[in-house]
Every structure is written in C-alpha cells, then in structure tokens.
Image (cartoon, rainbow, N blue to C red; front, side):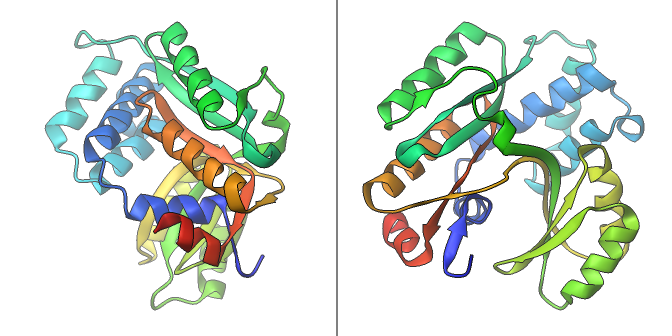
Length: 249
C-alpha cells in the first residue's frame, strides 16, 4: 500500500540502524550451531548452514567465530544444546505475532516471551493460533541501484524464485525455503548486490495501526528482537510512513 510501511519494510529500516552487534553475533552463532547440528558441517551439502555462514560473513563475523560455532554444532567441541521453538500471540490493535527462537532452556524462554507480550499490551497465544496467517519463505534483498526490476525478476525466476517485489531502494526476492541459497548464488553470479538473505515469516494480510497501538506494536517487536533467544519475528501490521517517522524519531 503506497504511503504505508508493512512489517518487512519497517524491519529493514530498523536493521539498518541497529548497533547491537553483540546481540546480532549471538543470534548468528546460535543459527550456525544448530544448522551444523541438524544438517552436518559440510556447507556444500547443508543449505541452511551455507545461508548462516553467508549471513555471518555479511556482518563481518571473524572466521574463527564461525568455525568454532560450526564445530560446536557438529559435536567436535562442547557447547549448549539448542532446540528450535515457535511462539505465537497477539499484540496491540489485534495484530498477529509469530516468532522463532533457539534456546537451551525452554522454560526460561517462554517465561521471558510471555512477560514481553504482557508488558507491551499483547498476550502469548496457543500453538497454531496465528501461524495460519504466515508463510515461511526465503527472502533475498537485492540492491536496486543500477538494475531494473524486470531484469531481477527474469534472473530470479530462472533460478527458481517465486516472486520479486520492489520495496524502498531494493528488490525483495521470495523463494521456497529450500531454494534460498540456490537463488542467492545465482543472483550473485549474475552481478547483483545482495543486501540480505534469510528465512522469513511473511504475513498473508495486514492490519493498519496508528497512535498508541502503533507505538506499542513497535515496542513489542523491539523487545522481542532484543531477546537473545529470538531468531526471527514477524507481525502483520502496517503504519503510515509519516507516523512511523514520528514514532522512530
């Protein structure tokens, strides 16, 4: 919707200003560890690990840190035993929220998440209460400078992508989760500049928020993303661009 920012755009703008590198590294290390544990330490044979390595390198994580996390996941070094958990709930204005976490203590994590929902005007829900509103996909953000959407679309679809959409100063390429790395590699080989590539939870529809509801929604998402165990968050809300500027000031 013109004049409004949906969550994916809001998230991108927030990430560009996020200086919490320590927390970011913690999340990247967890993803490297569990990707190696679930699929092995060979990145060529483990697309999830390959994505995690590329994302870690994009954030300038030292190779020693990357290799250490992979060895922990593969059982070559001692380390925490992380498990994947999903949480669902509702925030201000009736928005749906879905998040995925990696934790070594599910009791601690669910207590923390429930507290954050309650503190910011929402409530943690039961399994499957909102998951049907989201699609789990791969997303690749391509820099738009110097390229045409038609060229990106043709290259992406030929590589196996599902869709391409313009958003701010970039193009967002959507893929099946298992095609994320194949498409990313093809786009890079074609000379496109990749800004980010990740597994994402994409809402199927959106609720428009304003005023206090918009402010509470942003605070809830900030708080959830600030939690060390949370790997990804999505919510089906949009905010008027001018109001978003005001709230972000």
